[in-house]
Image (cartoon, rainbow, N blue to C red; front, side, top):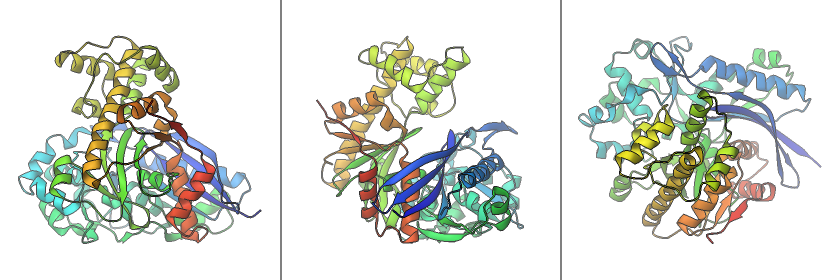
Length: 475
């Protein structure tokens, strides 16, 4: 039986992993984690930053560990979270660590930009949900502050594009990651000169845009040699926004579904051939991000399991370590939620004492205050399910019809209580899995780039054969 092997690097805003995918001639995909590492921001010169060079060191380590398996791979590719970027000088040297989107520098910045470029116009140009984390607001904040790094910069690369550049020496902006920035006009299929003029940043910083499945270049010989690899390996621009890769791996047939990519964020939406940019989508604040094979992901960003991560972090800081499974079990035993929160309430989006922030919100809104760990987590999970129900009603309005089912992919697919609550609250069957959807989608698009698979539909057929989702019914 012939086997094609592809190496995926999936970097999330908390951890990263190198995953080896083996696609057999029977059309089944097998995943094996080669390397896993922490990826957390740190404080530097008053800013919340990513350890950019450290991220690349972990990628090189993953390459070396893959080489030790003795299995020859056909290609490699990288997907990451969206909006963040690195700035390079005229010689192609990274000027500083990338700033994390959760940094406070964009506080109040959207309102200042809207005085120069109205909110409605910005949305019409990009079709992207207005969120202060977006690249457009990060750049405007830096420009307004007269940032020295931005002044010296000659090129800008989003995180996956930056890692690809380190691997190959070639610069390009991949379509799906570029669309997350709110700098890209999907109708014009290019970065918007009007937006760059409004934020006071030179559009010449931006590289050419390439589509998912583009073969960028082979990895640099010195990197291959150091990793113990003695053959050429092409680097593929997959759908390098992790959610775009995850959506490509949904084990669905047809179009009658909505999806929730559940991780630190919950991204709920549907897939379309064209962007949906209208008065209604603007009012509902829906985003139009790129997908595989030129599709668009019409979706909304909702705060997600980040809140549970923060609860766990604060508990650990106080000497009470709890993993996700333990917290979910406590939430199940606690019974129905004693309160409901707005999951996108601004203090919940940044590092904080999450238990105290939730209790303060409940007290301020005149609700019962959750006391135990289980009650806190139950409040978060039921509130997430309710936010999914509201988003599903909005999706029905945008599409003109109600989806027949929901696919939950990503880490949240492993949270059985969240899946049960989502099915119960929305009244739709929930298909949970795969949990490693970003890595699977990354690998499937590599297979498309190599010609091993012929279409997105065929890639999803492989996903259906390989990852049997767990079904949760509304009753």
